[in-house]
Length: 325
Image (cartoon, rainbow, N blue to C red; front, side, top):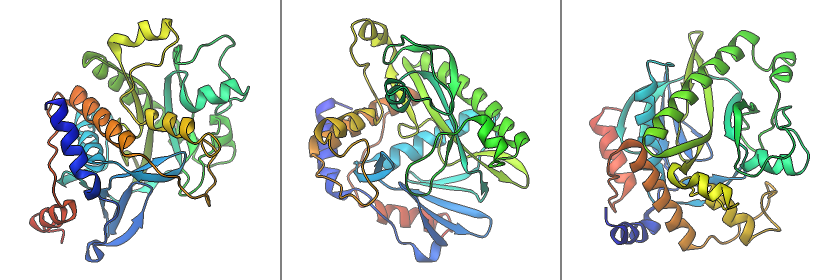
């Protein structure tokens, strides 16, 4: 796509974003931060909306976000299905994934290769993350000698809580054997993702994985290696920018987090659950959509198909074609 053309399409779509769905005949609705889940018997139909979550709050909607995240997640699930099994059954629409209904494990595994984001903020404050305190003298965005694993609770609402492996096992939050399977799976997936991204000119900085059990078998669920669950930096400019003390070229929602903290320092990052969301400028929405598209195309090698249309109508049509409605 030509850059100017992309921006015009995004602008036209700003008022057409998918904020919520209500397909009552699809199944029992469970609404997550960014996904609407319809549960029917042993399957779950997940509709990725354009809602954007940051600092554990839904902040706004971003044009084409749901489509991009669902499609890139499907891309990664297909690439990694022989490494670790996942919950995908079908993708009947760009915004929809049909998956196996699993028993969700209440712990997320977060893999980190660089010190940035929450871990950097904790480090500056002298606080460990999941019981881990990196060595003194690190600079922001510096690469670790080896990646770190920082598990956290999977909060349905409110802030996630970072826990150490020892705490998780001691408190029996997750069975020791299952937890170790999760760590092993996360390491394999992260190593694959990092190597794949490097070939595409990107750094996969960190990512989170969620897991579930189906008939006692561990599956990767929710999403994988998306711009919401991962950080991506441009590889070719990272070293030079790091040496100069500059921020890397970011292709994920970290630029949005940074914008929130700069624009509303009295509100973010510690926004309360009952606090009103402040106005979000159109410019940052457009910029984030453009960066999501760039990372989508860098990772997949495919052009992102951005079309201004009624997303709900398209989803309904495709679900009927696939006999889910």
